[in-house]
Length: 175
Image (cartoon, rainbow, N blue to C red):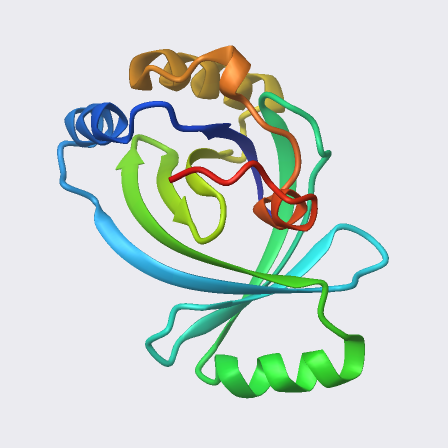
């Protein structure tokens, strides 16, 4: 199963983060609209990601809910019918919740940098350091921590869990 090292953090200054991400990636990034519907799963998390353009992905992932860099194992299956698949999974499993976001994606080396505006919560960023076969989780953590510094992300802004957890907990919405 593929793995990456992830961090999630609140964003203090979106404009500064976007400038830093553009500088490091050498590109303006690309905007992706996403609606994630989460379903109960006995292990890890299961979501259907709808890109709102007729495409989607069924995503299973398992990672600890801890602040700072964490190892995540995942499996992804694409779908050309995210609406239909969401309906079937909703009937079969029930729905835990839904997260809607606008994501700006940048690629910096082996890392996916996400600058997210999450409906009902505000602005966040995620790093996903995609581990290569010969890399250890510690190698990925080093990459994540260095990129945090270069992007201007502070340790105290790191979050545990998923956006869904924040929404279900009442979240501390931001403008």
